[in-house]
Length: 516
Image (tube, rainbow, N blue to C red; front, side):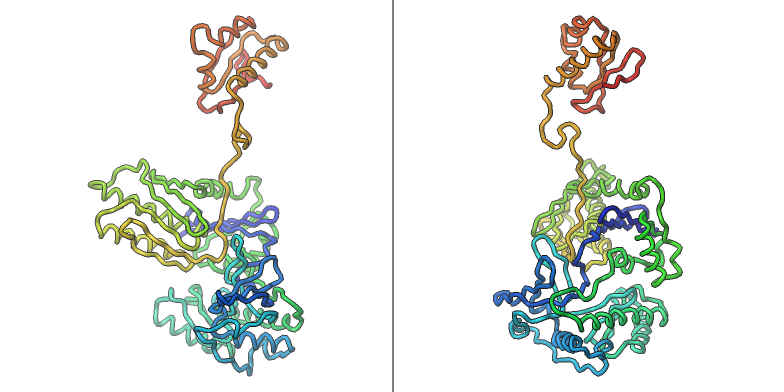
């Protein structure tokens, strides 16, 4: 598979397009002034405890308060709180957790007011970015994500990605991590670590430990709610998550972004640094790589598939709804059932792509074309599961219900990507109203009078929309003939389907357009 990352930076926004086999599959946007990202770690102050919700609102020093339920604190929050207080008191050993004795785990069912008090300082990590009117969701399960491993303080176990299937490889990675894992820390081995040696994994682990030590140092100087550790930029985070051996090229049209990407690649995958290119052509980078075209096709309420099938995509506060329509799809197989199966399979592939592309989260309901045979419904379910297997976001796909609906839940950690593919109407300029046909005809006559009296034109051709053409030429004694008699000229009227309703132009006897 050919994978390319195309990065466009303009103003205060960076857009990153992931292209697989020349097809846009993911689009990420980052505001350069975006202050809250998933993975950021804050020291906050409990502002209010909601007894009924068993949750708390926490001031993190940003515009919106964070939110944390009792279950979001995690079983090891006692240890997290103890670490924070020791670090704030200047205990240098907290940079490595050597000699740290963990606190008992929290009960699975408990009361938040027994753990947190109003005005108390808490250490939390952003699990979900602010969405709509909601503030960031915080968790007490602190972790630091690297290229190959995720460092998990206070959790000493070693976990291996479920996508690494071979038992021999899983055992090798487990033994290797056991030998290099710091005391008091656990690790989660990521999928990209498969086949990697001890040097690469150890370097990644050391980098994460350095970030942990920096955070410990900052805690010494805390006076109130503030951010103490930042996640990587969206560009670096995306590279960390998607960069694999089959990545072919990265293009950036901004020199600063280009240098950032090169530094990240040089640090984490030096053998692939040559795939990073600085784009210098005058044509916008998204236009050059066909990303703009794919965006216009893929975003919007109606998504058309090449075979004639189209999807209606509707967004609500509670869920996303997708309706599958066969459109002018050519019949396939022996009848309606085979056609419905083919339409649904094509739609399932596009829907899986749309969820990645728009980063849809929460509940997604898909209304497929009805199928009578159970084996066809099972085949459609298998196809959807296979297509969704390429999605890194956590998700669950349920079989078709008796109403032909498929329910999908997908992890939502940030707002869905929205792209406005509509343009201002050239006729009404966005007002919703246009000139009446009488006003247009009066305008044409006024220009005609000017060309005859001031430019001394005696032979003209008027090119206009078919509706206006019909209005001017209908009947024996039509408006065109009246103008010819009135202004003593030869006037020919032509119609052009591509013209807008109010669009027209005059041409002289040489066939040259006359500028008005």
